[in-house]
Image (cartoon, rainbow, N blue to C red; front, top):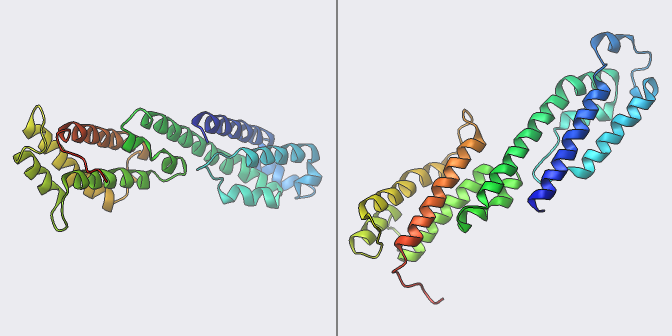
Length: 235
């Protein structure tokens, strides 16, 4: 699915959720206590039909990587007055926050499309909802690429191989010391942290991912430049 189509689908979901909230907004504790029939199909047939019509439209329009919380599904299924109260006060506000987070994710994907091909190719993983997996893939692939180009054998750490390559002139940069330190730092610190630990829940995951993907982008670009003199295998 192209990015524009995902944007259109999530915008439709957002509009329908807002409409569902508007339909159920009259439901208060006082109303719940005074309804004659708890099942809303009998109590408010017009509103009930409209509410479930919105839900059907949402189900048709959910973009990849976006899922509706089971509580909303359950409350719509039970369809009693107290369920409408939960839909209006809890379920819809939560889903609207999820929509905003999904829109931010699309912005992240749009940004990634401007980065190094080795970074931008994980957009599908992000769209399917796993930013941690996307980061792990990018930084693992950076390590694999460096080891492959430098022909690093088993038992040799990538950080040491980078240092040795600069020392022997296989990797070259305008400022060898700065380039070596940067690549070793990305592999020796960031790669290891990202591979073995999820993003901190105390920070905004998307904002953190933006900076880390940009770091990987710079590392891929720098390594490409530094390794230009290394002959590539014909295989």
